Length: 114
Length: 113
Image 1: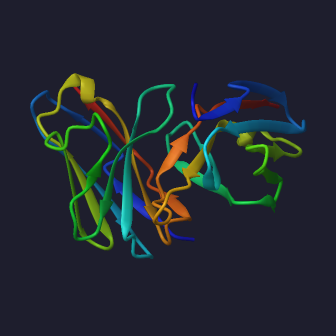
Image 2 (image 1 turned 90 degrees about the vertical axis):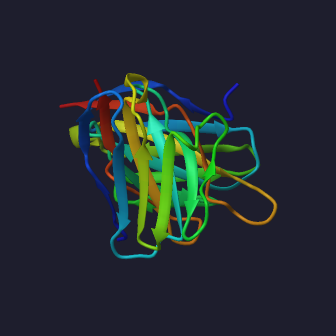
């Protein structure tokens, strides 16, 4: 089946630094990629929808200047957490869609900001 | 009230038991997904349903569109089935399906040997 590769799986960084998370669709072209975050024992929360070659659509309450999303190709989408703070510590996960129906998830990135 | 509600929130079963997890939703949908999240965090899509019933191995998923309800059944449960099971719906929207999901809170299942 289709695979979405997400890196890194875990990152620890100092407050104020920026962290980039990559999601690659390995054997299909993901025209749309979704980015989610998940706090412990809570459900996934959609942050933004990225479409290849266009600006991402952010959900209400998500700062677009804080969470930069780039979807420059059909197989790669990146999420950059800029000037990370401890409250940004969370589990971030991406998913790609083939036909706006079947979804394939990355393995997730656990971000810890000290 | 959440647009997608799951029950139970937590479930403990003995190996071999038949398990049912329920999902109710309050919006019009184009599809419903059942997802499995293991302790490491990775998520696997188990089923995508728009009507009827699907079966894969020991897993069965059903959906009743009129009642806005879906169930996930696990037959002959095994400790390796222990995970969080998440129901998610794709809201029906004009202009086509965007693929955006609304998630339930998840059901934490523990199967004891």
